[in-house]
Length: 573
Image (cartoon, rainbow, N blue to C red; front, side, top):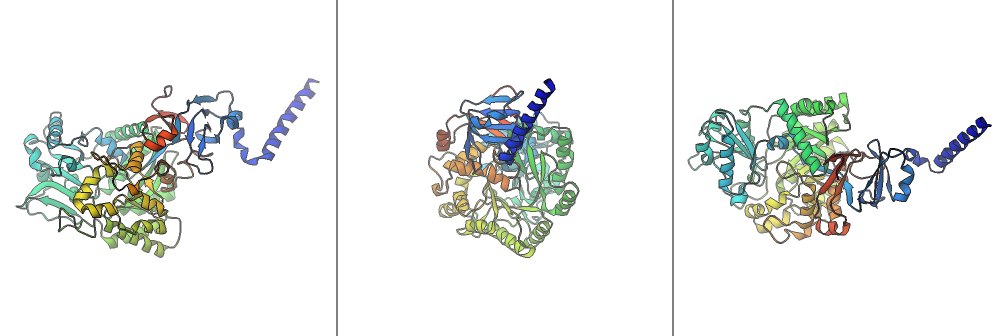
């Protein structure tokens, strides 16, 4: 009798499972019990099929189901952790589409000049750094922005007296200009008679003596003399940078390697082999990274992809290759059709020969690699769009998602080309906080307001807008980026700069999440809180979606990666 009852119960159970699956075969995965059940939240999913929800079920690092709590209760079982958020806003984990991760981590331990807004502060920070250095050791740092103290460019003479025994290299915030003291110039062999290298400038006095400032490829002359930081220092930098990213809600970054153009192509590969592979194998990865490598090494990346594939692990993806078309606005090396208003003989720099750039782009694309090219000036952007059009015509149609990194200044009509050609503008909203005054000074008010940071125009042209920070050039802070894109109020301004280009909070959020994921071919895994995707999400401090959409004023309260709390700790929200 007992055997009969037991057998009957088993048959009934199996029949109920069969009927449940037969009625809705797509719910096969839903039978599993959730590891984590997030409830009583305001969840913005980033998924157009279900934009909002109040609950989310997670198992094995991926999302099982999103919806109302009543529809998820069946996934709760023994061992399910419940997370009641009391109405807090939840968004997908932020994706930073353009960072220099290890460089940022290194700079956190070096001379940090980003906060200095006077000449005296600049000199004072260098003076403080000398005290802890032995004679002969290099003092390295960066982040200075001469626009904050009125535009005067620093010179070696500012710091020579306080650094007689230490060579110094201090990069500008944009990474396209740096200051060397006289000792560093002597070590690098930079003299009165040296000619400017291709794609770079040695800034000189009226007597043709080097001032200490080097622009774009001229920076290589000093960079080649600076001892490379140790492997342990670079590994520590990755961990430091990853923790900082999580603190700001960033769960994935697109890493473009070291943050100065013309730097040794080997540096990015050494960071991959010595740092990222170590972190992955030793389980020290904290955030997901999509790696881009110098375009000159495209064949090496092709070989690696053929050997390992594009997805190396749940943490590391191989993205593609990057090159430079021009420099930066702040260093007067961005390439424009018209000359700089404050430098009438200067139109900017073409950092890479166009024939070489076309050939490398065509070869990279023909091998299936995604290509990203840095372009800031209006002429540089048009030249790269021309290159991309020619390469696509030569190599044939496919889903290639060519990227333009920065796309800061665009002639009327150029935004439409991004949409027509399906080019991704990878932009950094926070740059406009510092660039507005500089752009007006360097381009003239009328010209600057017609072509600067045209986010709305690009989005209206159906371009896949991807947001990033360019950290350590600007801070890695997606919430600041979102607010900046919405408000467009530069530092020390009270009104919006080009208000017609302001975005909504949804536009800006999507540009830091699902659009950013599509921009690097990762939208199948991340970017939205959709069933089957990795459970990367951020809990914000606000419990009012309406207030957030109007003001974007909030902060990150907790960051989850793969359904596991990564910031601030496992037991405190």
